[in-house]
Length: 213
Image (cartoon, rainbow, N blue to C red; front, top):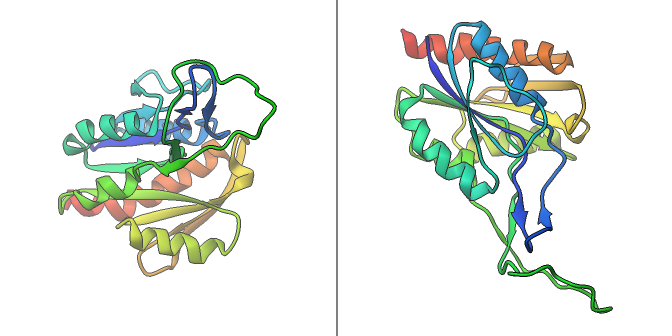
């Protein structure tokens, strides 16, 4: 049995007390992968941004809001885990200044200055032990496979799951799991539960079994 860390859902970067930057990630894929891992007999921790989807009762869920919160929680938990499945869609940018009060209309354009947030998968992968593994997700709108392989290499992932923007908020998904050579380890399409089982099967065969031996 492996202890597996999964990130899931979106994060929020607040502009003022009521407005934030985010995306439409539902957490369904994270929940489906958590279920697949639990069904295979593993111990699962999910660090989740704000979602309405439910996670399996056997999963330990750590709820967070911002990308910084998600990274901090993962840094606490990852050293005790065999690997990470980075399914979450963290917000990539945060405002340089967060207004203390609600920003009111003024009739003039509102200019926002944004900085990049930390890259959670890359940060964790950079510090992983030799017996740990990392699986990333790449959601691309162009040059899909090239960009996914570039991310795999840049973030030091062992595998990367390529999907498209159509997956956001949807109940079905189509993915390719790519390895370090750029080869397709598996291609899967169907409900997110079906896709999750196919993806986790590759993780179990190529990563969990490898470490176990």
